[in-house]
Structures are given as structure tokens and as C-alpha cells.
Length: 325
Image (spheres, rainbow, N blue to C red):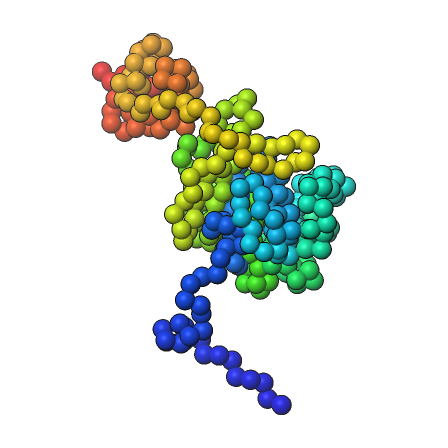
């Protein structure tokens, strides 16, 4: 018997409308956090709790339960590929999170116990993750963290673009949504979200949604969630607090009082900082003086020095900076 002919690759608008629903299906985590077969990037500084939050989302998806302020319309089969914790410690973490749910997530939450050592950036590694997803009939694949799945330079745009193509191939071959845990740059602006991720120019080409977990105050227990979506307006920031016993995040109530906005660092601030040091100063001396005088971030001080040099307000010379004659 001959095989059925493949459907045409080029179709008309009328054919597309007949084949596809008029409205997209609801997200698997609402509102709009995880579209079907979409890619969600979850980021944050080290030890802020992003892996715990992603494990919460994975269990909520597997159980079909609303948690941490997110609505989960239906249970999904979720495959977790995590590379940071030894398996006994990871199982202990999941067991603590499981208690409030009972057995609701038991059959739908899957763990790849042999994920370590496989690189998504290599064909053999990609095949491993694809085989694991197919074995478990996974609808969602968690990769935690992304840097453990590749050996590429995250500062190289071409290398990161190639890695993103591997993510797309995994998503398309498995027909699954991806939740990818990734770290952020060292200096992140207060309102940055998607652009805060390492390799962001490449990641912006493949991500459907971005979730950034931050701790605005050093000693605060409340964490802030910020959102960015490709196909929907962003949500307002949310505040969460971790229960250390259940390891579940929950709403933390009203947001902590925001710190007063910092004013822009002007050329005058830079020249006054330099004059306060003396006739000339090294880069680190000048940057620290600007930070102390204006209470700005290191990144803002660096940008201010660069701008002052470009506009001739200060003059770099022989590894030092001085005021113009």
C-alpha cells in the first residue's frame, strides 16, 4: 500500500483558517505564562530560588492544581531534566513539595535520572532528551539549568543562536513546551526582564515568555516576579514568599515599600567625583567615588564614566582619568 501524500507546505489563508482554530488554545499555565509548545525562560541570581519555583510549577502542572497565584487548567505530563542536585537530594525536595498535593502529581511528573552529562548542543545529547520525552509522552520538558546542557560560549551570539536552534528542534520533535532555567547577567537594571538573561539577543528569538525572580532587598524574605511575553502584555510584578517547610511559594501580600528612584548620574557628578579625588584617578577609584557620592549601581557608574569621556568632560590618559585643561 502506498503511503498517503504529505500535506502541501504552501497553503492559502483560507486553508490555514480551516485547519487552525480561530483563537489560540488557553495557556497551560495562565495567564499566558506557558503557551502550548511554547518556551518559558525562568531566570534569577544564584540561590534566589528559581529552581524551587520551577519545581513548584512542574508539580502544579502535573497535578493540574492552581498554585503560587497561577492557574493550571488541566494536568500535563512533565519531564524534569535537572543537573544541579544529586538524585537523592532532588527526590527529597520533591517529596516535601508533594505532601500538600497528595498523589495528584505522581503519575504525570517524570524525572530523567540519566540527564547529567548529556549536551543539548551535541546530536547524541539532543537525541537523549528527545528519547526521554517520547518515553514519558511528555507535554512539558524542564531543563534546569540551561548552562549544564551545553558547552558553548554564552557571550558568543552565534554559539547561543546555535544552542537556541537545538531548543527549537527539541520542542518541535517532542511536540512539547519547554521550561528553561537560565542565569542572568551580573549587572541587571531594575526593570530589565528578557534582556537580563545571558545571551539575551539569541534567547529573544526563541522565547515566548520570560519570568525573572529577584530579591530587591538583601534581607527581605519576599521575592519579586517580573514578566515579559511575546504575544501578550506583561503582567504586573508579583511578590512571593517561600514556605521553608513545604518548599512552596505563595503570595507575599502587598509589595514592600519601593526605594526612592535614583536620579540620573550626570557629567557634573563625574567631574566632581574626580575633583574630590585629586588631579587624576584610576578607573576603579573614580567609579567607587561616583558610587559613594550618588548611591548609584556599579553599572550606572561605569556608563557615566564612558559618557563623560565621550563628551569630553573627563580625559583618559595613561591608565588614569583627569579633568580637561
